[in-house]
Amino acid sequence: MDRYLVFGHPVRHSKSPFIHTLFARQTQQELEYGLAEPAIDEFANALQVFFAQGGKGCNVTVPFKEQAFTLVDRLSPRAKRAGAVNTIKLTDDGVLLGDNTDGAGLVADLKSHGVTLADSRILLLGAGGAARGALAPLLAELPSELVIANRTHTKAQLLAAEFHDLGPVTAQTYEQLAGPFDLVINSTSASLQGELPPLAPALIHTDIAIYDMMYGASDTAFISWAKQHGARQTMDGLGMLVEQAAEAFTVWRGIRPGTKQVLRELKRNLGVI
Ligand code: ATR
Image (cartoon, rainbow, N blue to C red; front, side, top):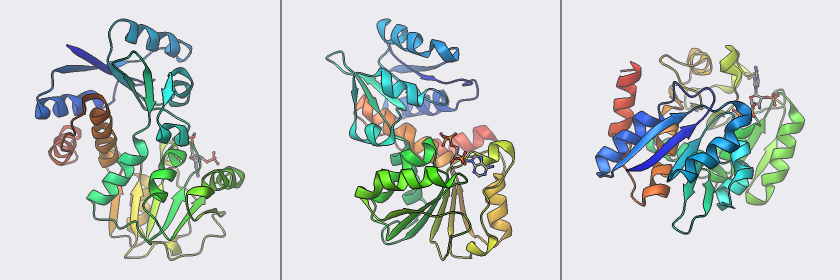
């Protein structure tokens, strides 16, 4: 049977096996999907062994995405732009193709929630790997403006300069930000420490859409905060997780699985509904 897995550290709580098993059942594809948690300095070796032993493809998650970028034979244009690889496919001619489906997953999830990106003013919080992966797919939707704000302002400036050729992207400090924004996307890891990005509450209004790439069984700190300040449309990163997986599945199997039912089952599995 064709074998796939996700590499990460830690990866025990990954929902990818659950999601891909449902995709496989739905599309009647025969495959198995597992987990691998190599030591940090063992990833390159573990990847090589997996494919030498007949693996067909894998996902790569924290902290290996940047390393995976350097280990594949060929990169898709979107992986090149993202500077990171979250999906690897062994092609029929034996080439390890590195791809990145995270940004496409974000955009697909935003659209499934009915969020309009064209001509919108988007505020992206954070300038790390997650922000980098989101920039090209967001700019491809032709927003009127995309502002990056980051605690370390120089990182936001570098990122804005790097993506400037793709659209109207600028960097501003948290203090400089002036609304109204139509959509705020939190790509920071602040909530992992139970912290909030230092965003002025005045930027939140009733018609704004709030997206947090993080997710949990209950509202993330950022989503709770935004609701407290009047945001009515809030979304967490669970949908993005399912959509990036669907995109990876499509890369591997050439068939696109439906995501609605799988997202519902995942929420049930997590105890969210
Ligand atoms: P990822 O790959 O998930 O994006 P990362 O590359 O480590 O992770 O980036 C984390 C991002 O969250 C950075 O933009 C970081 O800001 P700095 O560049 O200033 O470090 C941001 N971040 C983390 N904790 C934060 C906090 N408490 N408040 C605001 N931003 C925070």
